[in-house]
Length: 129
Image (cartoon, rainbow, N blue to C red; front, side):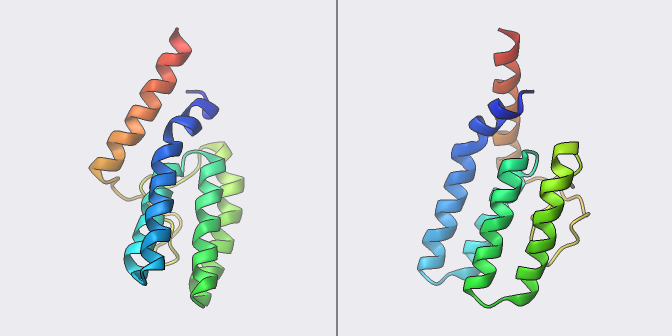
């Protein structure tokens, strides 16, 4: 699968989750806002650009809300995402927050798995043609 093709195919779904997060944060619903950041993380974690971008968004969120534990966790995760993702080393389904081990694999929600599979399939079919 072409990394850049997958990156572009998954982009609108990640951007949607980031936009939902921002909207909910603006309404003061911080828990739901962070859940959308976690969903963006699951969608983007196999692509270095998106993996790092989402962790940066989580870091910004933590900083805006004075969550030191989350901010420190995100700094560590940014380093990990930048250095490990290009090697294909990331725990599938991990939601990316500091409340969970950065090494723990989790099940991917079915709605997100459908989007990931479609982005992979479309990227693979572009290579075949």
